[in-house]
Image (cartoon, rainbow, N blue to C red; front, side, top):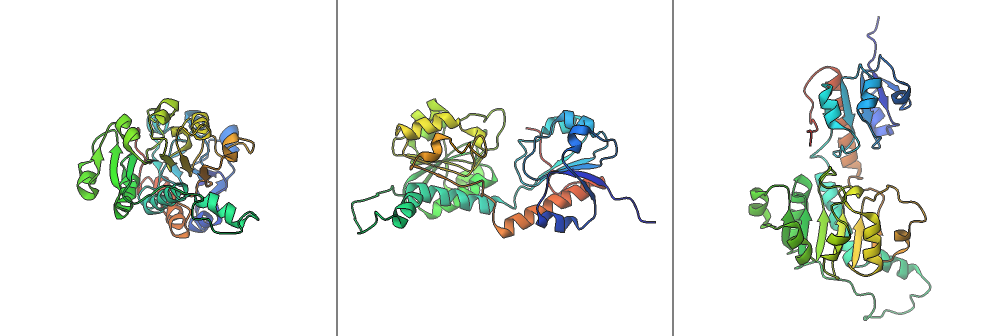
Length: 315
């Protein structure tokens, strides 16, 4: 007689995740988190469903919560820790891909790639005009990185190759980053005032929720670009819209928004000086495959009561 499979609630993971699971667990629909059940062994979060203590209490048998991705702002990690439930996530494997996206958005917004693409496809493009559609230099400019964790440091390495001067703001100084890429620590106000490009790489926490609002945007240069590869909630969306509309800052490049997705009639979507992609920071075949592999490994280790590959800390 075969052993009973662990029962795991999941929110519709993709085929890659299912291949790594390889029928090792019995998957239950996310609706079970509402109805509750005593015989569920774990939770797997794929597309950032909110997971709090009330859900955990409705599933009193869970031994692990495994997240597909590094950000766990949708999971109340403290609630889980209070109940002795480890939360797995996948840092490290997506640093390079996310940093690549940050630089792609920086370049796209700074050099007006989306705007240029639309114009090049339009009937209005009849002759090359050297005096038209100027952008701003990226090389030899100043980049301010907010959040000098693993992703921020990976961004800094790329920026160094563009001969950018690098400022950073973080909860604590990062001497290793200062030495590796010549980054200079600055207060948030100083960073905003001096940077030509500001890139947000920090996690979403109570401290960083709404970190960039109208007052912060007003401190930036009118020629500056804001790039967000963190979480949408780090930025006040209405304030950003008004700053872009009123030319308080020059442009923005957004991988994430708040809410996500934005309502289809949101006015920021009508602006030409913002480049938006649908949360594609880690969206490469190689990185997503490794995320799937690691998140499933975390799940299986948690179900067996073993140490996880990576356990999310309580922030």
